[in-house]
Image (cartoon, rainbow, N blue to C red; front, side, top):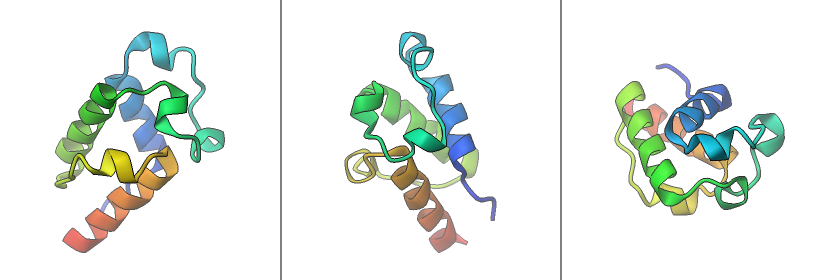
Length: 87
């Protein structure tokens, strides 16, 4: 099983977000516990992010994860839990 990392999430977020948003935000370890809203990511960017994670990591995610995993760090943890349960 391939682990989903914060680096994976940052890459995917940058690919899926509006360039005006991610060019202004320095994503990384320091932002792992900040809310997606405060980072400037809207629901469309997050929906696209979840779709990319599903396709790349071959996992099925509920869109509700956007509401329950409100930070990058939490999203990484939740995706890894799903990956582990599907192994």
